[in-house]
Length: 438
Image (cartoon, rainbow, N blue to C red; front, top):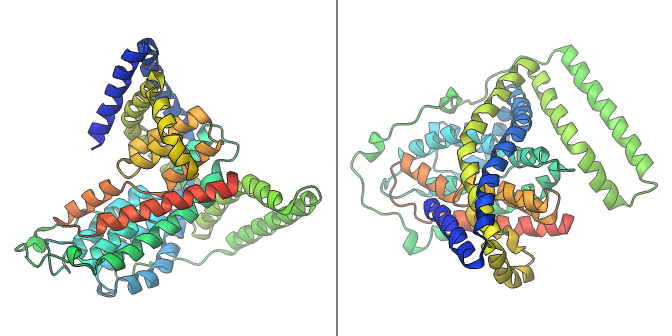
């Protein structure tokens, strides 16, 4: 489907330009779009290296295990037919904990492991079980505590408040996950979504679990005992928190004389969130006896690998969008759609982001970058594009990858539940952006 979308953008740009006399503008847009993509990646590498390094410190310091502990009781209630000691439960906990923390690269292998293990419990191997559908829905709409990718892009584009999308993203992902879960329970009862009774001989036995980077997914206990925090580390952590608390109270007291309460909260959050977030990750590493600088270097090296992977996608999608904009076709499309979407509070300029996000992560990433470049990262449309990108997942990719790993032909109601969650995420992201920035 993405092949057709990209080809359609290119063909529409050239044909529309041919009739409007903008062929020269389209030619120049193709060249400048390719250059802009490379410039963006170069600026993004530094920010990505910083965030990936800090997150690696926190991960090794025990943050991932803390989230696992919080998720385990919830998942045992949602998946009562999966034994607590079964490898599927451990893999699901690891996958969802990684997604919550924004560790997408770590989440995927655990998700594949979870699906193949759930298939061994599936009584109708040709169709996804209720547990598999529910896991897919939660995975594709996962609550995101730290949308680091979008924050990094905004920071690389000199946003005055890169973390502005944090609250809209948190609210939207919470709504999308809740909606997807409710749809899973509601749709599974419909006759049209019943699991197929025909079996696939020895299908479960044929499925081999992919290799994962962490053997903890196979460990029923999941939680490895950690050495106690040293007295020195406790002193540093307590002192840092105390000093920051005193400084925060002092600033709030000073600024409260000139600012209204709501404005005071917004400006304080905008100024303090990112530095506090960074220090918090380092303190987690310190508490976990992590050699913070060395581990941060290891995490930062991943930024180079990520940059190499996204360059081709960014170049092609940014060139296609730049050509579409230069031809005048995008402007005509926005003008035609805006009377409808404008009444709903959704800018037509952000519509390509909403349509492409369920199909392609790289494609929607490029669209988000293009929107921020044209309208500015701190404009309402730029903030909304970032919130939309951080609030939803590439639904079709996730379903195809995970169902394929388990060799399941019938996903039953998984697609509808995931798309329902996506729509809820878009609605709440838009409403929260209007509430905070409109």
